[in-house]
Amino acid sequence: MKNTVKLALLWLLVAVPLGWGIAKSVQKSLPLFSDRTRASAVSPK
Amino acid sequence: MPQGSSITEGNDTPVPHFLDRAATVAPLGFNRWFVPPAAIAAHMCIGQVYGFSVFNKPMAAEIFNKPLTGNLAAEISQVQWAYSIALIMLGLSAAVFGKWVERSGPRKTIVISWLCFCGGLLLGALGVRLKSLPLVLFGYGFVGGIGMGLGYIAPVSTLVKWFPDRPGMATGMAIMGFGGGALIGSPLAQMLMDFFKADADTGATHTLVIMALIYSGFMLAGAALVRVPAEGWTPPGWKPSVKIGGMISAHSVPVDSAWKTPQFWFLWLVLCMNVSAGIGVLGRASDMFQDMFLGSSTDAAQIRATAAIGAGFAGLLSIFNMGGRFVWSSVSDKIGRKRVYGIYFILGAVLYALLPWAQQTQSPVAFVALAAVIISMYGGGFATIPAYLKDMFGSYQVGAIHGRLITAWSMAAVIGPLLLNKLYASRVAAGVPKAEAYNGTFYLMGGLLAVGLVANLLVRPVDSRHHVK
Image (cartoon, rainbow over all chains, first blue to last red):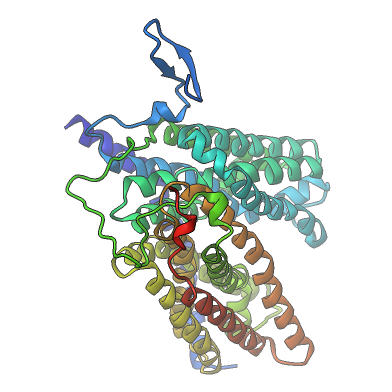
């Protein structure tokens, strides 16, 4: 039981920063799905 | 006294030093799932190098005493050498110190990697404070780069030995951590610089110091927790399934013999071509998307919005680069390393050939989807290679062999962007509109993948005369 908790905490130690990094990247990529990008698809240059 | 043992008890039993390999041998019943997070902890710190560009402007402004809002293009190009030197040193140190890493074990290597990497960050901070570019290049680039190389190969051999049943997944997890390092390092640095900036101080110095402290915690935790399996250990109930003459060898090849085999050089070419094809696109992702789908504008607000979309594209690719490392390397455990590289090269070349179509039909959604899959396979190529090496050369010195193979990455980091940028520039100079100028480069990248495919097809089992007797 003690080992399982230790293992879970260890995985959390790496999962939390990685999850934070992914969330930040998703947030950064949101403008990609904005109206401006979609508009470029319907009005080709 | 065995090598590395420093203290001898009264009964002559050598007590290994905490950092020695012998001190990291796991006790009976140790849960092997403790090891991947220890490896990931180290890798996600040194992966910060991919997010170095966030320091370009602040460092250039501080070192050269210029306003942050001014034109810093020339200064940035000098600061960027820190990144290039770091990557060169990563490859060189992995190649040179691979055998030492195998001998010393993962704990000592991660500690030395921590000393170099975090020491490099501190020297970089001092360089910014003293306005000394050479100190930044030496600290972050040279010293830090050595730390990155050591940290990159430190857990590979250990993970392969802990997970002989799933070596692709195991090493894929660690190398995914390296990819994730950029996703963490870049926003963390930005957040810290925003917090510390004041007047002419961009906050870069404080940021580097704080990052060194944070990364120290993770790297030292990784070093303390990492364990190697006892000699001859195998997972309970697991039996190696080796076909005679198949692509998974039951024998081991020492590093000094391995690099003289054609298999090593075919795999070197496999990695080099896979990385070359992806790294150029990844490096120019933001500009590429803006040129191909958003056009140019003179309106400041429009330029900001366009840049945000381009950065969003680069951010999305980074996620696929990271995810692909775990997913594809895990797939390789099921279908085999040669087949998975076959997919990277054939599917990759087909997708590259489709990118011009996405541009011509002005379909950004299709472009994003195609590029995301391509970059996932770029990441997968990094993550699958240690398991491919283990299949060919056994687990005996796979970390050291991997270290030497990483020189292919250093080479690709030069030729990939060079080919893409040169061809793009020549097309623009020839009068091709910017939006269409990338199309030729995509066919070139597909061609590189075709070369990789041939090299992959030529990989055969290693001749028995190279096996460890």
